[in-house]
Amino acid sequence: MHQSTVQLPTLCARCGENPPVTQHIVQEHRRSLSPWTLLTMLIGVRVSRSEYIQYTAPLCADCAAKVKSRQTLGRVIMALGFLVTAGAALMLVLSYNNLSSTIGLTSQQLIAHYQSLMPQGIVILLGLVIALIGSSVSKISFASVRKGLYKFYNPTYQAAFAALNPAAVKNAR
Ligand SMILES: [Zn+2]
Image (cartoon, rainbow, N blue to C red; front, side, top):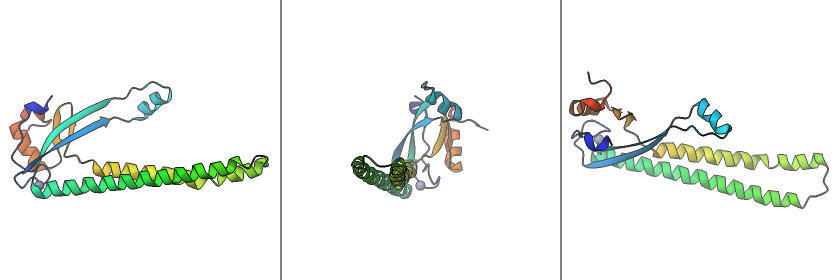
């Protein structure tokens, strides 16, 4: 909505120095995850305040290349994490199938068997953590946007943006 009304400075939003050669469209789903949100999720009521944000960031050739390689890196890390998780899950299923043939074990032996599955469980979680890290690496943001108000991280670009769009920044002064 605010997208169409803002004017873009002829500056790179990342370095604030070079003239832009390309426009990078940033799409974000900002979810405010508070302890309160977690609590409401636990009791089955989802009061998730998710905000969809989209804005355009002009980029110079140098920064566009850096952004692209960082996105690629993030996706590779993500894929690696999922691979680790999938591998560990497969191992878990295989071990579990072995367990089913051990009917008649004493409870102590069963506990020992279940404990032997712990490492796989930890690796599954580890893979998910790696995937999450990859996801955050691949997400590139140039500004914090709240209620249509922009705060670009690069101060030079922010100043140029504020001069063009005084109504779209928080502190115009
Ligand atoms: Zn740049």
